Length: 588
Image (cartoon, rainbow, N blue to C red; front, side, top):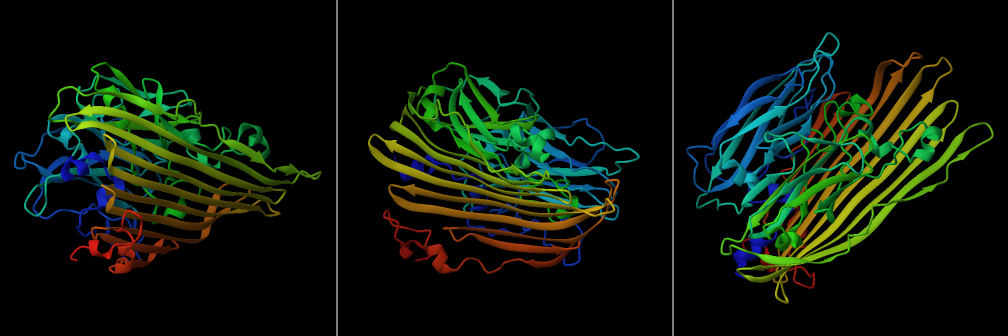
């Protein structure tokens, strides 16, 4: 294998690949001190040099009912050659008034282009926000004309008055001397049954998002981009408790472990952790004005490596690829897209899966409880939920390069503790949760290890909800939330680290609601929040920004022009034994 083929053989993580490239990122929109509009520290997708071709999907469309808004797509006539990058840009707003947060999705040919939720307005604030997604890996889809649709189901009446508007476009950056052509998958297959695109509801653990596909006979690599969004009874799944404790704690039942399970022909093929997204009406709406939670307005998919199944998928027979959500309790909204790389120099690839220790490993967490009810009825104690498992999936494919053996080793974990203090004047629930995934994808040519990718995800989440009842029947409800999204990627070729990327996105928010004796919210106090977003990689790309809010307005913003120092960057470049190698720094 030549180095170029090696680089092509392992994909970098979705977010790391989006932010990488040596081009400077900037904030989605620099928050202005004093502003009550949406304020985030999220970066835009970095752009290569050159003028993009722009294809508008829709302009200033109104969303005031539950009907889809269709659009037609035609590839840009002025950018017919290779593309260096493809970026979706979308702008949304909602008129001032009362409105729920709404789920927003954009589609083309059954494939999801964007998945997120909307910002809730207030009587005085008409929020507007901008989102972007790197769609370079979906270039094969965008080469052909197709039909798409935008779906933002919204109720507008005398009570819920907020009308949502949106505009979306695709930007195509031509390959050039300063921006090489992207190496993208050769085909993209949606798992849903809707030919234009929509999500599938997974109400129970046995419900499936599935599609049976007969793929080309020269599949060399395969990945699945997965979205699983909690809805309805599952919206606050992270606060739920096992059924045995639901009545005692006055909480939702069904437990609080959720995980996406991937299968091929009914055989376990991988797992995807579920992120605890909190929408802008969640827990306490004032928590998220003006800074929403992590990824609330713009979800990221989780990419599952299915390459060990390449030989099996290439046999010319139909194969079912499916997604289920363990623990689903009405319900999760799901979509997924299969990304396939083909061997350009082979018409038939053969091979099979030779090892799969995920088979037979049911995702069954261990539950513990110290809840105790005193003689006066007071309840104190904690419920714990834990799961930690490791699996290996290995398979080979006979390609034009020779026999490639692909191995995916993954350790996934879920650790949750919920402490309750319940008495005549207090209802307090404190949740500490952490979901993590460590995976390694290896590629071997014969017995020779050629490429290796390490990927780490960490989703820390905590919620302290403390409701105090006064003697007149009124109460106060104080909420403090911490969300984190951490991702680390490292790519090694021939034993040498050639790329590393590190992402850290955190949001901390607190607020206290005032509630009268009838249960109506009469006001709030103490709102404050902060978000910090940091990205760095070994190509010298770096981004750092933070935003601070108080009483619903921006009080501070740091654009973070100072990136991680040179010493920190050196630590990402390493010899095979892990020791730093400063000679690998750019420009040395």
